[in-house]
Length: 508
Image 1: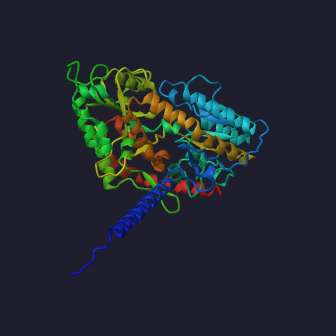
Image 2: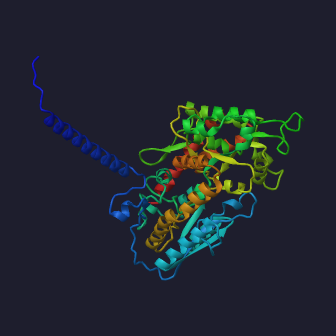
Image 3: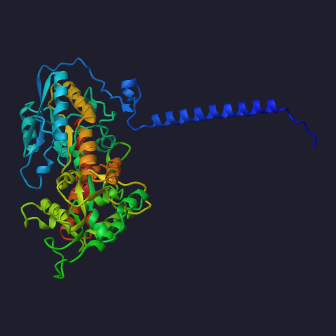
């Protein structure tokens, strides 16, 4: 083959040209990739710079609600009805996200105070929290008398569906100024809490309590090391933190320390402290539900599959074991059961403790280092970790049906929710949980996992057929007859769903 060699100068020019083209292509690819990342950010919205939330020097620009900035509410007192309790087991669940009288140096309290002062000055109104032992009694009395005593109701979660079906709440989808597509509202909650495409109760950054009530584990790091047991952090990150792993670690940690041949909460060491609620948490962490929603946005029964029974069997295997202390087995034997569990954990006699995340703050005086974990998967084939929002301590936000100025209420609620995203939520999540409570960087990462996929099970918090309550009641007698319980109650579950549909349809 004949060929001619091109001049060296031409060859250099061609090489330079190719390099120039490659450099330009790399630059364009990088720019496109960066744009794609920005496009997929979860808090991104379409619109102008304030709406989109662009960053300036890596600092997010505050997303503003689409409200009339010149609104003036003439000093209106915005009354919020919340629950109150003096019980030793329930004082942690008095809502702390509504009002604060003054700054105290506590990050959460001060953030609520500053948020309220800012909004009250801006729109000329006043937020007032009214806490009652029985929210339902006061709500029913107010509605029955036509007395607009309350602007917002922060109902205990398990009571909210009954209030709504009784006609006590407005459909918030019809209330002006509320935009549930915004990032300060919980999008998963919106999908789960609506009924027939109506929204009578909702959750979001306005309700800090629903972060407090998310479930998880704390574990004793020094006890784990002392016993030479496997570190669960790498398991979580590898996707292999499962019920079987939890069982093995709990089994190896438990010990009859006083040698009397039986486990005793006063003296011995346990692998796990749980509660009766832990059963439903494990069902949800396995990705199983009692009910989901159909195309008409009505509930339908999903429990009863082979996998749901497998999840319950794994729960029973861990919970109904000598290495597990069920806190509710002490009911009637001690003044308050939860402080006993916390004392057991803090005295280094428990490896794992199932908690609602609010309880992590009660452990701040513990000398021994502890870590925070998500609940385990059912098995390694499960794609993601899931966390349930515990309905017994969670709350939902509603507007009374007798509200004469719902547009004003919608404006104030949207303003509080939006501002909470930038005040109370950072104070709660970034300062209190991730900085003050989490004792290592891994725990901080675990909190991100815990909050990433929260479960809202309408069949559980609505308690159709009394099934969810009867399910957790099994733990009081270490009863494993879940199949017979479901078979017995399934017709009643369906009957309650049908009744709920009928009641909601009559609210039109």
